Amino acid sequence: MNQTAFVIAAYVAAAIGIGGVLAWAYLTMRRAERRAEELRR
Amino acid sequence: MHRFANPARFLRLARPASAVCFWGGLLIAAIGLYWGVFAAPADYLQGESVRMLYIHVPTAWLSMSGYAGLAIAGFSALVWRHPLADVALLALAPVGAVFSAVCLITGSIWGRPTWGTWWVWDGRLTSMLVLFFLYLGVIALARSYDEPGRGAKMASILALLGLVNLPIIKFSVEWWNTLHQPASITLSGSSIDGSMLWPLLTSALGIGLLMASAVLMRMRALIAERKVSARLARLAAA
Image 1 (cartoon, each protein chain N blue to C red):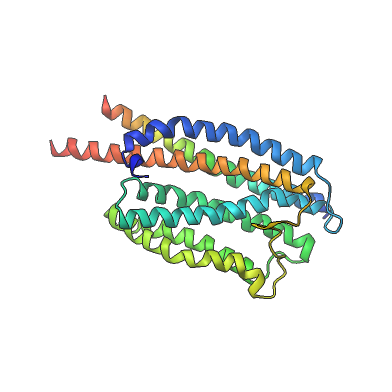
Image 2 (image 1 turned 60 degrees about the horizontal axis):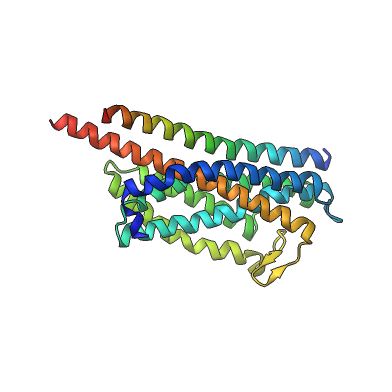
């Protein structure tokens, strides 16, 4: 493998990890806040 | 800090702050990473593989500073019983675990073309792996009690005990023979040329803001989940 392939692999791994944790944080926040709002009404 | 002990006051700040951190972080990280990957020069020794610097180093810094934040939250929860401290602890732990995993994976990928191996059991890599396990330990302890307060207390104690690993990570490259290079950026200056240093700092700022937005969103989720639990308990009692 050439060096560029390693660079691409590193950035793909980082995008999956950081993007994944951001998506999880956002979705769990939306779900929890929506549920809290429904119960408040 | 105690001014923000009130969750309602915290939420008034956290709602706009999480959006600002996310969009600002996304923009700054995109600029920094584009600068590092496409505009900064290749290294005279490592060639193109040095471009992994712009993702690996920020995640290393952030997973270590995230753990320091975890310990501060744990201390605040144990000593001052700050109502948001255990929320911060529980929000930081999974985010920090992911950042330390990304640091380990990108470091391993960088190690293959640079050192000729994916992994070595040397001081820096092993202490970084211990940091990842400490994050997992905090998550596991916090979830292993039926009473959430007790779980947060035990997780706080582990977060404080694990603090000893941070200087081990920092000084591992000086204390032991290692394949990992010594620190290039210290408080007294940097041995990295400006053409690589500035994109690195820009990436670190952007990715740091993204991490902050993830932690704030998790804190908002945990506060909302507690409101739901309290409300359901009141309804059940009525």
